[in-house]
Length: 431
Image (cartoon, rainbow, N blue to C red; front, side, top):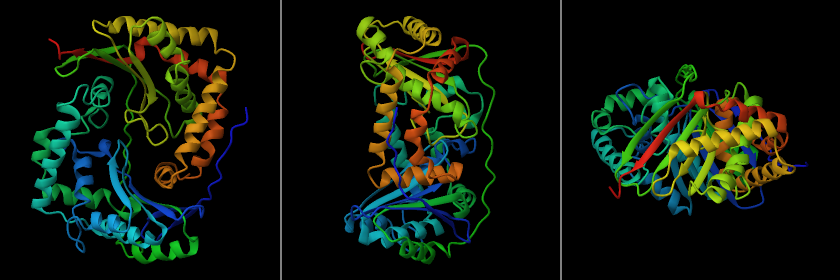
């Protein structure tokens, strides 16, 4: 099957202070996307400081030595742009989308806070309260809050980096100090531990000059050594359940370890495609069986990575399936049917056209996602950070299209009950 490809140009350079830069110009619309990604995320938090990576992301918006609190908001929105940041397992990103004429403004703002955010007791206490409120809204006071991304890792993994709650406990957040924040910034927010990507309407020579002007004098600090987070896989099934007092219906999620997404990308990619074969669209295997035929779940989804970032995560990660069930739903029955369908795929292979249909849909999604300037700047910054290969973004549609039926069958055969971790939500809303 012929998969269309993207051919976004990629230019790379590294400043003297270690900052890696990716430029991908596209003059078709007068817009630019700017992304700065730091090689630190939830897995890098020290014990006793759960939620700290996310808390620090908030602190990066609270002003700097040169700019007062809220200045970042004012400067970006005043230019007609938008901005945000997000914390992931393995990185934290900051980004802006602006009219092309405001590129220098975004570069100044990002370089300014790379030199040093305004870390004060007042800012810290204020943002601890903001993060606590976010946890209340997104986890504690919401049905299925944190399911399964906060609940399943603790069942699946042993080590603190992989197993802990990345949103953080109130106790850990409240005990964080300005000194903790300063040390976290010093260690992880070094220019050599970051990548900058710019996508959209700009001239490469002029953009390089602006980047050198604004980022070139950011003081260099040593890049922290990247720890290995790997741990042994499961040899026996693990299972836990909990009552969600707000959940009206039961739910279940399972995870299986997959090959290293960076060191072993060729063996990892079939699991990404398998997730789509099983759950994407009404014709997919688990939707057709669980939802339409047996009617033992109301919805089912499959994906790689606890935060759904299959091409932007390091080892270890997992293949996840999650399903919501009707009243009185039976998680054991759901898991038995999943095992049946995996066995059927492993022994009987794919139906004619099943793989091609899935690959075409995946390629369409990949192509659509890169249409927006931020859909290029952000992933290219992460791909540079983790792999040194931002051009992989152009290659993904083709690579997905090259996954074979034999690879899908082998991946399905590897998802055995004895290597599975499962968490079950017991509905408590009607109790």
